[in-house]
Image (cartoon, rainbow, N blue to C red; front, side, top):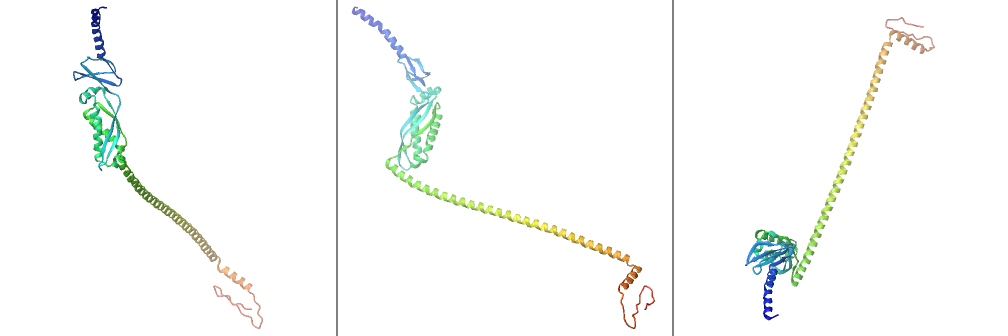
Amino acid sequence: PTPAGAMLGTLAMVPVALLVMVVMMGTYTVDEGHVAVTYRGGALLNTLAYPGFNVRIPFLDDTRQVQVTLQTDEVRDVPCGTAGGVTVYFDKIEVVNRLSADRAVETVRNFSTSYDKPLIFDRVAHVVSEECSTSSLREIFIEKFSELDDRIAGALRETLERWAPGVEVIAVRASKPRVPQQVKANFELVEVERTKLLIARESQLVMGLQAETEKLVAQINARQEAEVANITMAKRLMESEAQRTISAIADEISTARSRAEADNEHYRAVRLAEANKRRLTPEYLQLVQIQAMANATKVYFGEKLPSMYVDRTSPQPSLGS
């Protein structure tokens, strides 16, 4: 081809190339888990672009992606100046957070796409500085360390709720602070002595508890012995009372028996006396006298014989032989 024809062919390809370039520059993709905000002429638009292919105006629009899934921001080498003047460092403080897609435009407009720097990184350093300035090295390293995560998370949530409600803090994890070697050696020595003191106090406490336990056992045994003695004494008293009751009943039975025998004897005597009174008539008495005289016959020898007179209820003649 002639030079003029070649030039015409080249000029014909220019619009095609420009069209291809415009199409390529006007098309972009958004990654999954992200949304894209668009700046047009430096002004942030209120529209969002979601994962997939999207279009924009070349040379006028500037798109930037922000993550709306869980992300972990690592704040490194955070200084901690304690109340005692010792400075330690946290190698890493991790903040798990998430940006809400519905509030992405608002958050980016207020804090730019690097919203996590003022809201998380700077805030974490500030909270750690406040906590350390009022705490000793022991408190930061041991006593309050387990609470530090919750304190940082609480402070971040309070700040975000006020200034950026679209950002949510899920969790905070702080590494153990890095202590200078000399301070660490002194600290470990103090901890050893403190541990010995705690062991001594615990030993005293255990001894006190053992003594208290022995005292309680002795009191319980004494109480049991007293209760057994009271039960034994009550049993003996009941037995004595039962024996007295049995004796009283036996005495009553014996008295009643003696009284019955005496009554029987009295009744027998009275009846016998009444019978004798009825039987002792004058005729019966004369008969008895004669029988007695007959049974008492005597033989007298001599010139004279005695005389016998029988006295009756009426004068009787004397008898002689």
